[in-house]
Image (cartoon, rainbow, N blue to C red; front, side, top):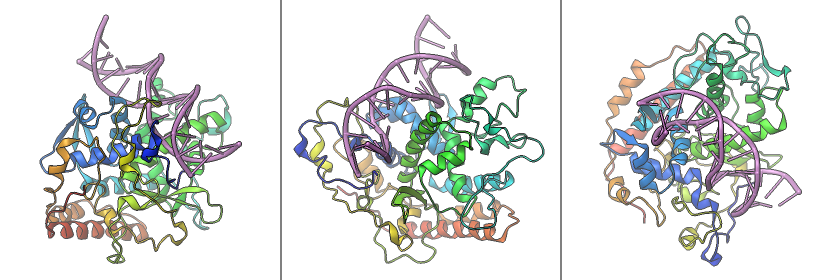
Length: 398
DNA sequence: TATTCCCGCCAGGCT
DNA sequence: AGCCTGGCGGGAATA
């Protein structure tokens, strides 16, 4: 349950303590995005990011890996990443979808919203999975069938059982557990199937196949939390609850929205949602039990329980595609200094870029629904861009 | 009590 | 050898 914000926990009343919310990965990610999502940014140094954000490098790696897996960044060299920006997301997602389909990932079994993770193989790769409780999580079913067709990026041939020849099975094994790959597979759960809502437990099960043991599951779920936090900052997903069970779950937002007019909705104030990442204080490294002297500042987020139920109506955060965090983003006391001035001066991206992109990159889905979906994405982005382009600079909140 | 997820150890790879 | 990466899981904060 992490969903609702308690009210008082982090208020100043807490003289003491450490509040994990202030150091959440999601918040850090939001700050990261705010820091670099602007014109003129091309490369990002990890040290620089760590310094500016006041966190250790280790945390930056987590963020960067997830962002890279959805296209926002790409690695340029050691310690250096290239900022691709949000505009790269549609393409990255489309590629994932395409790839997932090729892998038959998430092919639905006809019935309803269920995904069924492939018995991937069919010809080349035999289904490895499950047998061994040997412990190793069976390399994700998803990746397993990438043999051969896999291409660079985070998607690599994986399952050692399947691709046994590989010399570096060790590093393959490491890679197949990588946060980046897991992120992509997690995203595929949504974009390659009609699943709209899934709990991290379920996601872990799906991603692990059936032969999971509890420890492996637990670890995987922890990672999924990390990923979910970052994706939430990107507003690619949002946290809600499953209707009946009330179990916490994540809903895919993707790039939809705005299609069905959501103009009425208030811009997604990042602060309206429960533990929405990205709204609170920035990260800095205080030890867990150290005094939390920033406490009071962010307290104000009185949140309301997420109204999950009305899922869709949830006004679509028209903002979502408006791109996350960057605008009306709030920093806490440790906000990167450079950000404030920067935020307001970024918003003009030519729509035609999008058009080019759309026309150059128009995957040939065999399935009409998918084609529509792609077009849908593109439209959403176009309107977002044009909207921004026509607006005066935003104001910095706080 | 269960869920969420920060934190930092430490192994593997690279320079 | 030293630095960079990043998997991993303990255990504390939160719900």
